[in-house]
Length: 273
Image (cartoon, rainbow, N blue to C red; front, top):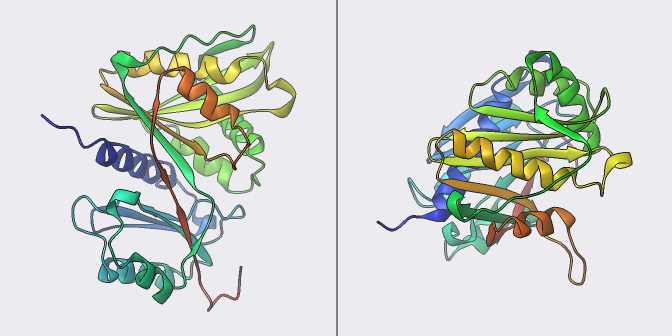
């Protein structure tokens, strides 16, 4: 049986984002819809500008101007200031340039998508820091480390992430230096697919092997959950530059499958850019 790896990668990521944002507090003005086989997520009062995303398209129905019209219509109805539309390159239609021009979509930073069968993954990272599963009592601290590690504001988002971790599909892990939580990493289990997401190390504890150790412990958790595939994403480095996260993932034998361009939509009615 031929495996559509792109569909596995995109579908699992879409569900993981949906799971996080389903727990958003009212203060964030969150809303979600399933359109064209993908998920469309709006966080109207997101202080980071990250969480309004549309993704998972091209596998239930093709990406067309009508589909993008429905996605953009949702964001307009919600009063979303801006949103990121993410479509795998294999799902982009021949007339994509005309479609994105019609809706004012501008290119953002690309992301690298990686995947490998779990029986090919060889994650052996080690660190002197303690790496362990996160208990419910640690969820609030976990959320703050994640947001601070990515340089995001915490207001409202910390509650969304804290409450989202209660979803049984998530397997959160932490990195401790003594009693201090200094790094985090999450695993989302979606049937046969496990998604590495939500990994961040605070600046003072980087380059100590924590990222590699988090990959290893989450790969083992994916195996224990009966998953067959491990997927991840990270930023695409600029020409001549490197991305340590990409290096760590490839060292664990996850393979780059494609780079996915982010397409940014701005709501001119809100006047925000």
